[in-house]
Amino acid sequence: MSRLKPLDTVVQAATVDLFRHYGVSVAPVPRNQPNKSKPIVPENSAMISFNSRPLTGVLSLSIPEGVFSMIKHDASTVPQPRDLIRELTNQLLGRVKSRLLHFQVVLNVGLPTLANADIVQHRLQRSATVRLFEFRTLRGDILVSLDGTFDETQLRYTGSGNHGNEGDVILF
Amino acid sequence: MKKILVVDDSETIRQQVSRALEQAGFASIEAGDGVDGLEKLSSNEVSLVILDVNMPLLNGLDMLERMKNTPATAKVPVLMLTTEVHQAMIQRARQAGAKGWIIKPVKMQDLVAAVIKLTS
Image (cartoon, rainbow over all chains, first blue to last red; front, side, top):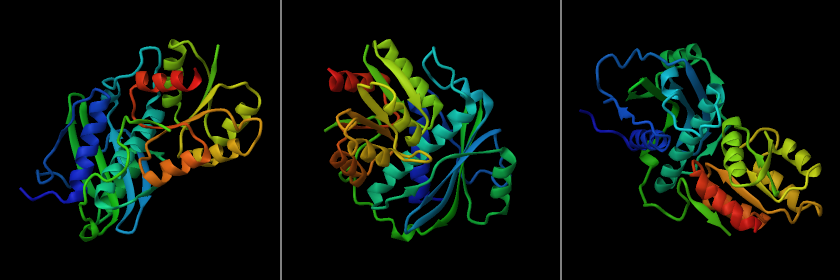
């Protein structure tokens, strides 16, 4: 099995932690399994751009319909899948950004936008630099992709540093 | 009943926060971006603003700074609710006059506890 690069580890951990927060257990699919060249893109997708000196590109998150029913939410609210996928994509990149601070990388991020599965599929097929991450759930596979320019030689792990973590409530 | 303005471009987050606040005895109004937020703020008596950072039209930090530079809204406490974790951004909000910074995703009981503390 090939060794994961730092960015891969960051994305996998961020995805697992994000869905754990919402009560959904996800299991990363080993990246060297066969048939990785033709992933099936789930129907609900959103994308968000990011840039920094070593890392520039777009992150996409695609979720099958069945996974939405597994996501914990207040019983009195009914999240709309189109809004929820945007927010989950935003939160996923937030977690990636948080972890990259440990490598002294400060990402500037855009706003999440909806994308249909065909657009994501097209991006995945035409890009030579795309990295795919699949996660098994009880209701289908989640797909995360990173497409862009990544110079991981500039990533230097320096520890947790002085910044917040997900769930922190900091009162001034 | 104290009224809380929830400003976030995600309807899911606005709903989730509003319901949690209503269950704790607050009234809530919602806005989808900073421009909408300033408009709602000018036409409502608000006890506290919960404010996202990354939003279209006018982001949360810019809305915060405009609020604090406007005498009518300068004293309304603001609690930032965002995925952003970088100290420079947190310090910018603090210097602009925010009362707190909450990093998404957050447990609603933690958020409500902070709102109660800041409005009591």
